[in-house]
Amino acid sequence: MAELATIARPYAEALFLASKADLSATAAWLDELAAIASNAQLLQLADNPKITNAQVFDVIKGVAKSQLTPAAQNFLHAVIDNGRLSALPEMAAQFREHLNKQSGSSDAVVYSAFDIDAAALANVAQLLEKRFGRKLNVSVKLQPELIGGIRVVVGDEVLDTSVKARLDQMKVALTA
Image 1 (cartoon, rainbow, N blue to C red):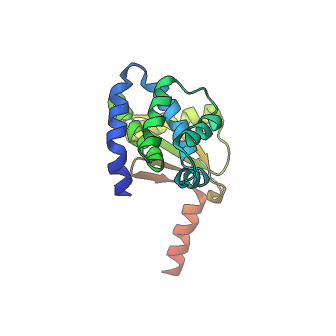
Image 2 (cartoon, one colour):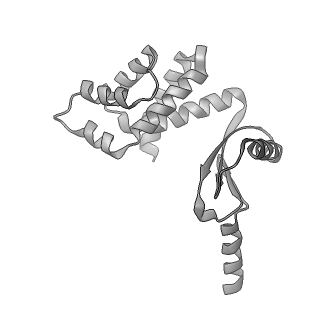
Image 3 (cartoon, rainbow, N blue to C red):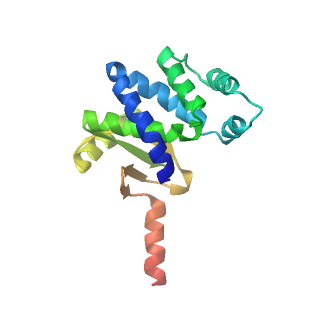
């Protein structure tokens, strides 16, 4: 959604510039706040005119697993006070893009039908870094409908070696 991206851009850029001292810690609390802010019930609560900004802040602070730093609390207050809670996940994504650009890396999501142990994931990450030609921050998400194999998404590039993809290719070939 272009509108959210436009709204989120100045927040992400300002936060990136303000947190140059400890970008990884900022990314950690920002990702946690983004996950909380993506909850539909929380957004509905925040949109309720009977609920104050302080109450919304207290709910988010209570749900957060980690203790929010003063910087995190100030940022969250600014987002809530300006009515931009729904754009928080996009702010986190844009912040992550700035962080990746600075470090010369990219985020990679490996979708798998089964859990991947650490050794196998390290091997896959090494092969993917060679394949894509850059340092990757690899995360794993389970998708049982893949049946087997993996599907990798790096930016706008997709590498799909799943059983489901192969079955879909066979289906197309047989029905053509």
